[in-house]
Length: 118
Image 1 (spheres, rainbow, N blue to C red):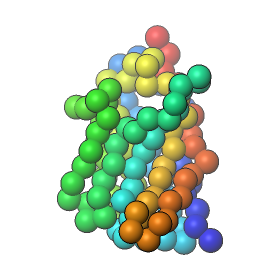
Image 2 (tube, rainbow, N blue to C red; image 1 turned 135 degrees about the vertical axis):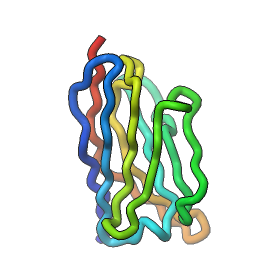
Image 3 (cartoon, rainbow, N blue to C red; image 1 turned 60 degrees about the vertical axis):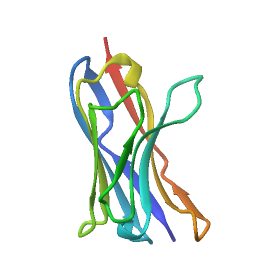
Image 4 (cartoon, rainbow, N blue to C red; image 1 turned 45 degrees about the horizontal axis):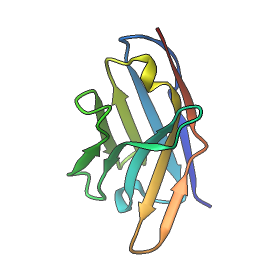
């Protein structure tokens, strides 16, 4: 059974930083494209960051470019998202995703709430 468990969310002050973690079980993060998405109340889910299977290429959403860093720890089967210079627009539920398009596999975590106070 595949599980993606996010952690590290919480209340952060404007301008602060946080590090989210996604612990995977039932799959190897090194064999999937891993990504972080977020959804604010009343808005569609949007891509925050993605990292390829190899871990050598990254993609970031326009709203977090330069403030976010995604990384894989294959040994711990975990994916991290470091975010700096947070602002209230970063508030939302952050979800971890594992995808293998060729195999038609797509898994989501339950999400972790991030709230940035102004």
